[in-house]
Image (cartoon, rainbow, N blue to C red; front, side, top):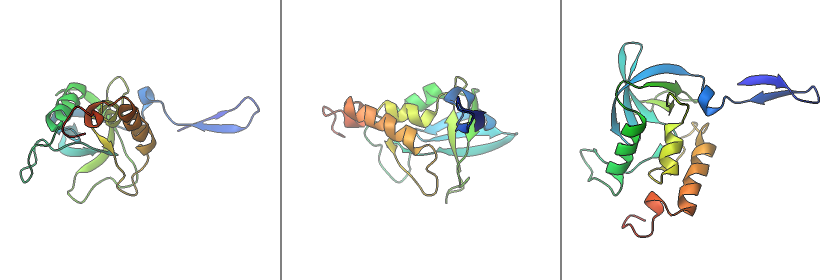
Length: 160
């Protein structure tokens, strides 16, 4: 967060833009599915659950592949190719009950992957309290997809 003086001399705060995401650098090892990625973080393999989205299942051992699950995984892999440098930005809780690190993952060009998946209609906006820092952006992107009948909200698909 940056503090600057407004035109009237009062301090204002400004969150970093997507291209200026402040956080922890990591390198993508592989995408597991639409909302989970494995990264190299300071020489350690770390499973990261993307904050504020839920994508259809594509690899869960105990559940069938869900409608648009493979497409969500494919888009995540396109945004996060192996070897790509990313920035992890955290919220309140850093780990979930499954020991996955919880983070917003930003691409080298500054895009929040959760927002991109929601905008494509391949993810629903969710909040697992207290982690709601990125929810407004994700919610807005999901509503854009809903309004455009994209992905999960495409009435011609069986999962709509």
